[in-house]
Amino acid sequence: MTHSTLQNKTFVLLLVAVSLAFGAILWPYYEAVFWGVALAILFMPLHRRILARMHGKPNRAALVTLLLCLVVVILPLSFIGVSMVQEATHIYDRLRSGQLDFGAYLQQVIAALPDWLVGLLDRLELTSVAAIQQKLSAFSVQAGQIIATRALSVGQNTLQFVVSFGVMLYLLFFLLRDGPALGKRIHQAIPLDDQHKRDLSAKFITVIRATLKGNLMVAATQGLLGGFIFWILGIQGPVLWGVLMAFLSLLPAVGASLIWGPVAIYFLATGALWQAAVLTAFGVTVIGMVDNLLRPILVGKDTKMPDYVVLISTLGGMTLFGLHGFVIGPVIAALFIACWDLVTPKAS
Image (spheres, rainbow, N blue to C red):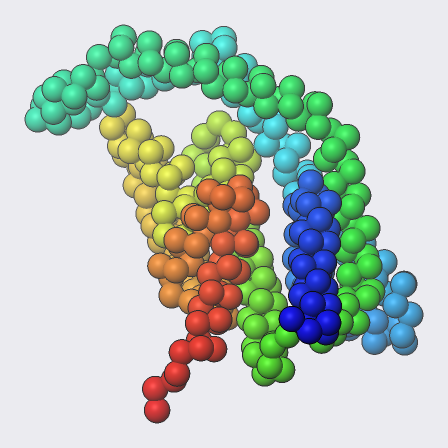
């Protein structure tokens, strides 16, 4: 082994070691780093226009873009979160006081079912109100313990959240200001062909923007429409249910129907026919069409991925990474497809 070969191997080992160590240092704040990078990519076109208007004052342009990001994205989410917590607290108080009795609701639904379906549920031991109430009670106790544990954890981690939020904003400012130069440095450091690097970086940026803009727009629209129809029908906690529909709408195809569907079934079973008809028609034709029309245009068209790949990668990403996975999953899937496209010969 020559001296130069030994030097090269030693340098590669050193490079890998320090890269892994740096990754371990960043890992406790990977969420802050990830969202800082994602928001920088999303708001970079706006930042360029602001920078052009400010005649090359990068610090001021980055600060203005950061403030717009706070006003457009973060503050509205904070207000919605406060309203959701208030409604959830009110519903919980009604549950504790007995004003909301799921056992009585269940009995109404069972009474409205046809005999053959009741017989089937009897064989499955699903029509005993007392047994189901006992199961619901046990579930409520477990859920209460989990919620209490989570609440205590949130209280203990408030400082950690504030620090992470500050890190994200701090990083976002510098990525907006120095992002293009940093991107060039990373582009030069990657040992790949220039065309391959351009293709992969373009795919990465496109998927980040399309996934964030598309999924968030679809989620916000479906949540707003779902909360609106719940408010029209007089259902308790429209903001809470709207937020839940927005969150579940991150799952393509099924999404918001997991909330409005059971409510429509309850209306139908209890004889509230016009409410059931209105909610079903609105859910299928309005809320459902938002997903069917907007998501392929905003997400699938730009990412150039089939709907089933978007669905599976979103579910898998959220399973592994939590809420952040609705972006991370499709990005990994898109890069996987892009990498294989580079090595797969194209048909003539």
